[in-house]
Image 1 (spheres, helix red, strand yellow):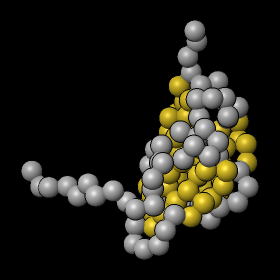
Image 2 (image 1 turned 30 degrees about the horizontal axis):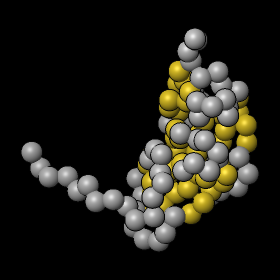
Image 3 (image 1 turned 180 degrees about the vertical axis):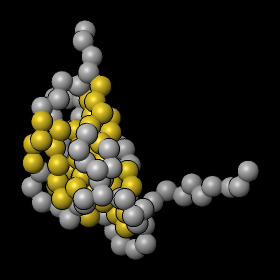
Image 4 (image 1 turned 60 degrees about the horizontal axis):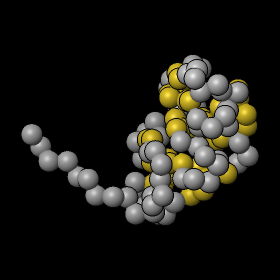
Length: 112
């Protein structure tokens, strides 16, 4: 088996979850309060928007990032360039994944 480079990416401290851009040149990540991205080639992290308690996110081919949480924050989107997030839908559960075309979401809902 070939070895894999597991060197941490400087500037991603506090990341909760990581996800790749469609071209694999960027890594996006939510922290406790912000949604950020960082180039794998050069430079430091770039803050895209405020995203309290965001735990999952997906970057789609249309250069949108969709994010949500298990805290009732809902499903939101923001341009991969940054800006004001837009509420897409309320979620009764957790965002798991958005398909690459940005048209369908997989969520998990549970009852107690």
